[in-house]
Image 1 (cartoon, rainbow, N blue to C red):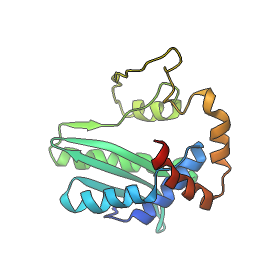
Image 2: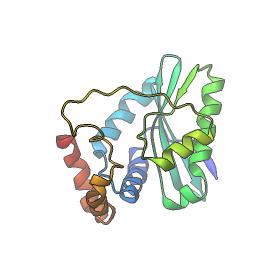
Image 3: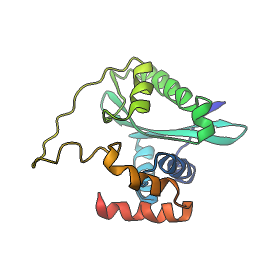
Length: 179
């Protein structure tokens, strides 16, 4: 398995993103969002796309965002095979090596929700320290509404999990209208 700089290859990234979101039962972000992000930030050194491959086939990818002296592990995606083979670990190891070599002070592994056990396990394996992020809501039932891991979203997640890929792409275009 190798880790390569993906430049602005939004097509490879998006195919991995679709597979990941479908596996998780979540609507994808629009393809245009990632294409714009990569084409705008990568040439200025403000973002980087890393792709893990085996035999030339992409298994996983991550988008890193640079902010001053920090690196933000912004987005990650993988195939089921890439997940089984630890392609995400290779990407994170390569990203950490690059951050250290670049003199970065902090590597931000991003936010998560308490119910995202797999993601929390992944981050803790790398000795990341979880810090609370304050949220402000109104209303008695507003707590946890933004956590897609909540059981209240189970049926919706099953729908996205079994949605054909072309429809999933269309769902990604619709997410920009619903947040």
